Image 1 (tube, one colour):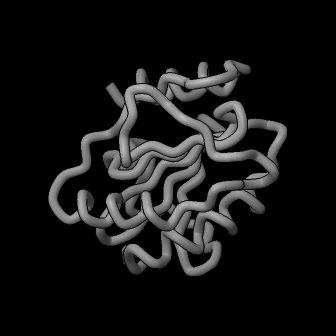
Image 2 (image 1 turned 120 degrees about the vertical axis):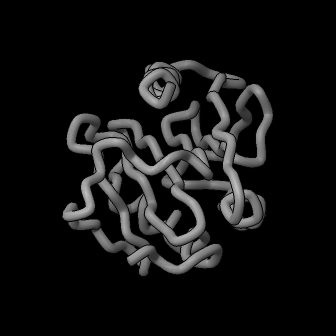
Length: 143
């Protein structure tokens, strides 16, 4: 299921315009409140792209540009993330970079995992820096 969702996001990044389809995650427990709060904190523009719309509409999904950046809040823990993996810390948020998908990053917090797919025309560091600010407001990094 996760692989299908990631594949769908990557297909969206391939160049669709207008409303794009992104399968929304189904957060549970504390993640629901954290993701609801994050939805109110996300920027309207990100690395030059304006916030767009996705279908089905969900407070747990955000896209910018022609979906060249897509965020999903409340996803499961990354399957490839091992307990010994080191996270990249950006703005006080730990990010897991998927070794199999260089465009896929997951913010690891104590209440929610936030997955971000970044198209090749963007600099991941800049995008992660801008997204770390609101993500840091919903939770503290997991230890």
